[in-house]
Length: 66
Image (tube, rainbow, N blue to C red; front, side, top):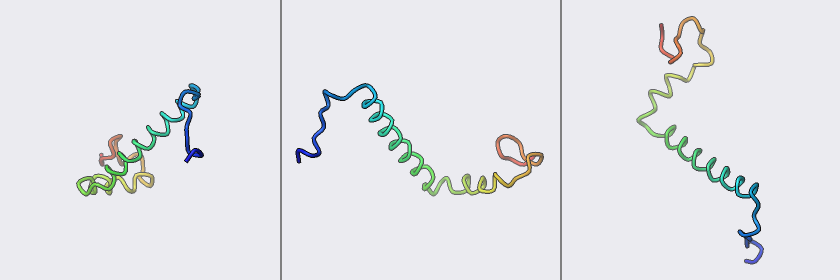
């Protein structure tokens, strides 16, 4: 078990920033997964599924047809 020991006092500022960003990224990804896989959001997300293939002239900035 000594192999997995972390010396928290010896961690530098860069080490702490790395921990912060790794934990923050994990929390953000969990939030995105919950939002995407929530059945209530299915219609809103499916309506934007072809966004990359749309012509600019036919749609406004919010993705609705003009």
